Image 1 (cartoon, helix red, strand yellow):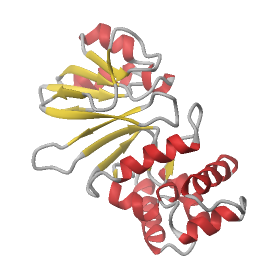
Image 2 (cartoon, rainbow, N blue to C red):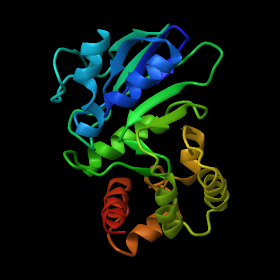
Image 3 (cartoon, rainbow, N blue to C red):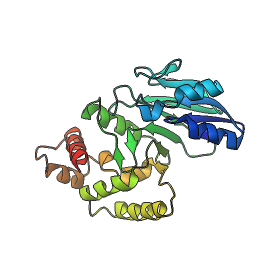
Image 4 (tube, rainbow, N blue to C red):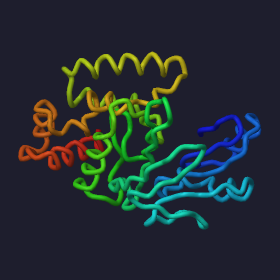
Length: 240
């Protein structure tokens, strides 16, 4: 949720109850709902929130999201809370997944990337191909390094265990894992991350790095090109 003290927007509301409670607690209205993809843990609260607040819903052009909504595709824009969100197609986790990118005045950019990019990881390929997902991740990695990565799940700690298996000698990864462990031990979120941080520690953004290629080749000896390295890593992570 983002709010300005008067109005709010929410992203991927899987459960309306906690959101309605928070809106009441903050005494703010709900202007808009942004949806990245169709999975129930991202859309389960849409109907109840729309009915309770009248909020407008914005979501991907090609996915089954509760109607009515404004359907969006790559290059479209959404204006909410004074923010100008650019829509980016990010297929891979699902076929029509989208992300929302905004540059707030005098702040670091914001990225709502759903289940495409996690800190130290990426989403499973339920509907897309390795090539699609790698392309989506490559375009996200090209965003400014200070972009705040607001992904949809707190999977960082488990993602880091896998990332360390891929790159045990990556000192940026060792340091980040220590930071995340301290935060989680205090009951604090590890998120948002940043694009710059992810480029240093996320194996799925590092398919061009020799150590990552070598790790992928332990399970797939012919993995040399980035898409093959990515596919080998994703298969490894699925079984990890």
